[in-house]
Length: 221
Image (cartoon, rainbow, N blue to C red; front, side):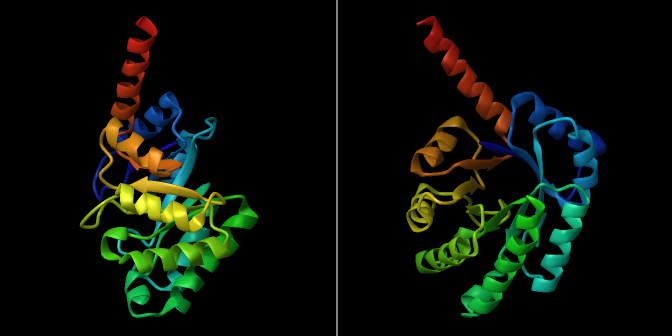
């Protein structure tokens, strides 16, 4: 359920190698990286079930629909098997739902034929509940695989309230990804209980190790 994340604007080759090694060791769903690292991660994980996820329009979402479509195609051509795209938040807030719908439709139309999982990032900290519901409905109608709370670079991350809201709107047909500020097991479990089916975090190793310790204690009891 964990998307192992390294989306910092700095770092070394060793950081990316460690990310992929940990994802493989702990059985994470995918590595979430900026598109510039897709080729490297695809090569490192070529013999692994761990998927390679590229962040598109990241982290602000303030690129054109054409740029997002190009970046999506480019990431897939270079080996991405999952795409997480940030919506144009300003367009949403201005009532330009046509732009939001077009960029989501473009993502789906590019990803689906390629067998690539696609996720829509709302950046919930900047949105009203009504706006969150609007994006979730557009995403559901478009046929996305997941709606996702946050980039982790906004003023706030995932909340139980937002996960419950998103799950209520999309129903059981698509996934809900909680990301941003999930750094411990209790928080991760709270998100899962609220309806999350993926957890985006850079603390995946410590979360899994905490869970393993609890299981061992229960086994000994």
